Image (cartoon, rainbow, N blue to C red; front, side, top):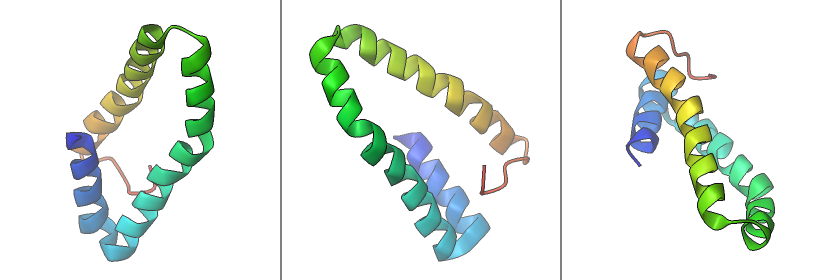
Length: 78
């Protein structure tokens, strides 16, 4: 949840209202594309393993983003 607030703050300070709109759009597209596939997968496979795999994948993606943001090397398009 905090990463979402941080992302919106970065989008607002870097790109203004248009940056927030673009960040929201970029955040919504994967949910629409992968949401249905996730539901089918959850019905077929072990939900606990899917949840752990999804959390680990999210962590692998967000940790480098957070480090780049703290170092000041994170443009909005990343």
